[in-house]
Length: 126
Image (cartoon, rainbow, N blue to C red; front, top):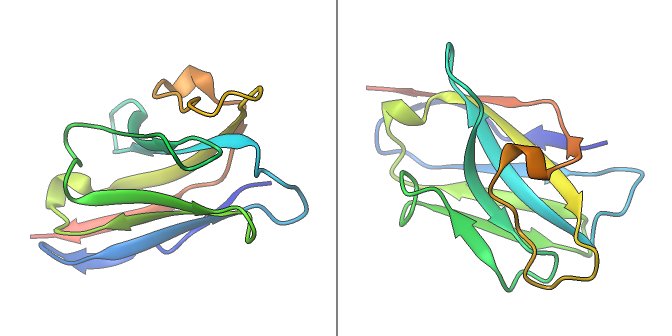
């Protein structure tokens, strides 16, 4: 139900924009998030955004470089990634969870999300 796209192979310092679409289902009243998982590591939080877009959270490792945004008309969430580093290399996953009417709801824990999409690979070469 969630489809992530936009990954690829880039060089150190480059930018990418990931998209997460949800064809066939409306996620406008859901918190949305991006997580990533590198080989041999656990899935980790990257960024989240409330259904209204008013609240966002970022992992310390991406603050100032990544920006999460959403377009509820297009039912899509984006992750703009600038100044990419080799340590950003991972499979990126998008997730969604029902906000229960809470405008500020944007969990940062992997267990806070019920809906997941297949990932998109991001590889940053040095």
